[in-house]
Image 1 (cartoon, rainbow, N blue to C red):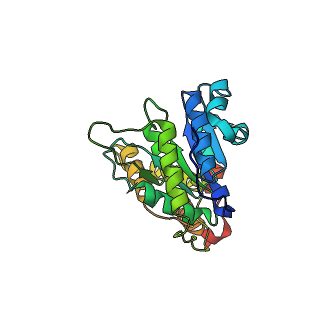
Image 2: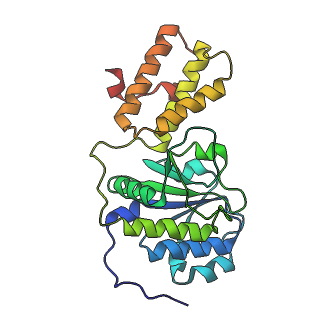
Image 3: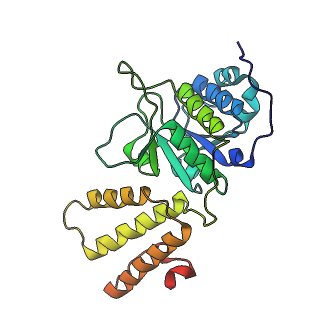
Length: 264
């Protein structure tokens, strides 16, 4: 049964730059219901990472009037392909992590996504129904967000969770403020920085014990910062100078390439 909503109004351009990313969704019905949920709130980008069953008639049935959005969904084989060019990525996960992790409420997540989407691509990332996002996937995102629930249940149906966040984004439209003019670093830019940092740490043989733990610490530090593209270039320029000083000639050329700003 359909529920009447408010009169249709023109959607702001920022909504076109917000992606809803479903990682390894198992049930095609949830994909269809998620498509309907985001279309009713004015969003238009649905990305699917290695869906178990798609396309599928069940997805089309539950998508209802959002079948066009379902048909235009982008299907990729890994998360990095879905969020690589996004300046902001927020993972939705109810599971606690020992690592210090910036946690946002759905409303706060919506405000950040809208602010970023004023000038760049942003993404909300949802994990599979049975297990949620893996730790490695969570670390690809700058923030974690969770929906408060009662003590008897800690998670929602996937499509219901998508609806909560889509509604929060719609509700935040009036109060959203665009990001500063300086462009944020993309997820791909951040990952290149972390790989470059790992390479330098290995060349320095630092630390001698548990380097993976240290790298996670650096990643968490970077995720708590709204790094600008120019700041990432500056940091990578510093890493390149370190490599030059220690005579590390075995580095991957793609790791050492940095924009001219980093040479200053």
